[in-house]
Image (cartoon, rainbow, N blue to C red; front, side):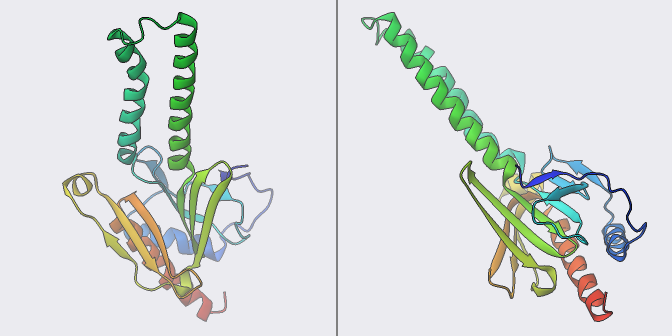
Length: 217
């Protein structure tokens, strides 16, 4: 089962829980609206759930690495797919039986597609989630391993943004690093779109959450 999934419609909930008003106010202050952009790498208030989500918790941001970060493995996949045809055209395997060539090509293509599929899953399921309560960093490595790191919003220090290079500046993506006072010293969102907005939303949510805690909410 994926870590993030479509939220079911609730039968009966309070119309305006306090945290929903808080989220709406923060998004209004930063000029954001619920939307999905940059090919799903930047999702604002997507209406999704994740496996350890609490009852009074809402996903405010769900982030993936910018799609441009996939160009490297996509180009490598295309080269690997074209390699057998290019090599056979040189006549290097002219004396090899056709059955062996067919099996070799089949194995090569299966390995190539497996590599591409794993890289896509790595991008798609490695997400950084910002809720009204905490930060959730899900790092997907393969079908058998994923690491999940949590950090409460009321335990974070000032988040930082790193955007270096012409391409990153042009496409507006970069790294977001958040220092925390919890067990995990830092939580990172790497190569995510609009890092300045991400930092702004995290800072505002943290400040509003601390205010709510002082009010006993």
